Amino acid sequence: MIRPFILIALKRPRLWPALVSAAWAFRPRGWYRKAPFLPLPSKPYMRWRLETAYGDPEAVPPADEIERFVTWSAEMRRRMRPRGLVPVWVKILLIAALVGVVAWVNLRAGELAGLREVVAAAGYWGLLGVSVVSGFNLVAPVPVVVFYPFLMESGFAPVPTLATIALGMSLGDLLGYLIGDATRELANDRLADFRARAEALHARHRFLPLGLMFLYAAFVPLPNELLVIPMAFMRYSLIGVMTAVLCGNVVFNTMVAFGVSWVLGPGG
Image 1 (cartoon, rainbow, N blue to C red):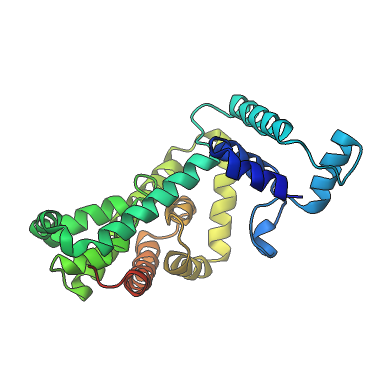
Image 2: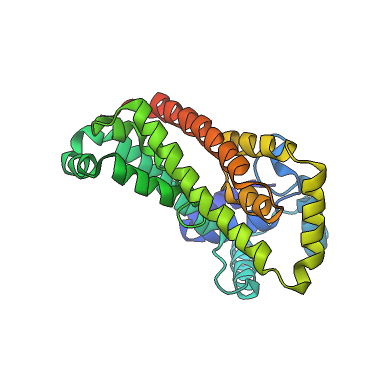
């Protein structure tokens, strides 16, 4: 059923963006919970589409019709997409490029003498500044700790490096807290009901969300601001939230540093 699409992808690489876009648009709900854990269209859905189009659920569409369909559907989705929204295939390519850059820098660390000298000259204060920007993930969603092997090759020490990165990321998360706090103070009448519910939730559960904040910061590779901003809005204390974030960032950066070093080695 998927074979014709694979064949046309091999024969016509220019259609890859349209094919990826179509596969993502036709993905079944909960695809990430079932093997093979890929966003591929389900067999029942594909059979239904073939039956409605050709009157036969086992029909094999000609290659030219597949090309016209995926091209047309990609164009329709592009026209219906809100302005400024980045297509999924572009995001996939950007992530792949980012992974490639991280791997290349770490693996070629021994050969990048000029870059190592610049980084070493910046020292821990420079690392702290980069980590602050990295910590506020809405600005730069790339944790600087992924370059840990390169930093080791540049002369940084393991413990001070991880401590500096964790502190810098937490300072970046502090900006998220201040945004949430300012939003609460500036909330107009349309947010009054939500604010009342948020504060009532805070009154009922004072400590459990702080524990969840720690676990989220430690083990979830998503921006901490997704929780920090709402918790500031709900009047959770600055000290409590930032303590949970800092401890979580220490755990997260330590795991990522050892993981990257294990996969890529200490640098080339």
